[in-house]
Amino acid sequence: EKVRLENMRSDFVANVSHELKTPLTSISGFVETLKLNEDIDPQTRNRFLGIIESESNRLKRLIEDILLLSFIENKENSLVDSVNIYEVFIEIYDMTSYIAKSKNIKLTYEFSDKSIKVCSNRDYIKQVFLNLIDNAIKYTPENKEVHVHVSSLDGNICISVKDTGVGIPEEDIERIFERFYRVDKARSRDVGGTGLGLAITKHIVKSLGGNIRVKSELGKGSEFIVIIPQKNFL
Ligand code: ADP
Image 1 (cartoon, rainbow, N blue to C red):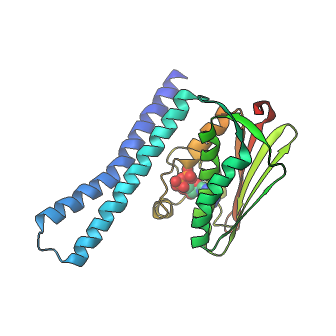
Image 2 (image 1 turned 30 degrees about the vertical axis):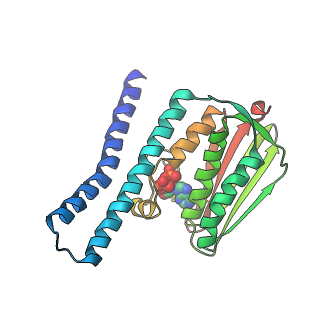
């Protein structure tokens, strides 16, 4: 077990180094080019600056996600609070509905009970909603739909985020919760993904004693289902 954990750790360090190095190489390359070519035409110059900007943003997102993952791993359930799930969801809905609108995606929701509470760090619940809804929108083409359903069933809170997007190939389903695993690297990159969102989500759900699973059909859509046990109710 010790050897396995040690291997996992060194794989993670290797992956992090690689993921950070890629945008950094690009940034320093374009800075160097701009420095060496002072008479570069304004259009090309702006294009290079645009690349530097988006690669810096990518670096920022990566570092934020890596720090968040490490925070969750180390602190487990710190700052536990009585969290109203609906209130947290609405904050995320307000944020993500703008992105959905820009793709003309219909983002809808249904709560069987708006007073459902859970004993958790408030930011954890926010992060779960944010990652799942953000992914659903990212991996769903324009003019389609994303639906969030929250209910309490058999002593559990059940959160479902269902999209009508690209879907996930069967052979990848097992692996999408691994750190940095992406079905389509180019697509994830284009939509600003870091490959850490689902790893973070799974960690949070596990720290709440719950589980997460996914049902998906390629080309038709995916449904992420999070179950958190009722014992976490306050
Ligand atoms: P990323 O930052 O790349 O989105 P995630 O950890 O959030 O990383 O997801 C891992 C991979 O799982 C994604 O790159 C994508 O291939 C796949 N994925 C996640 N959510 C969905 C979804 N709703 N529909 C289709 N594929 C998804």
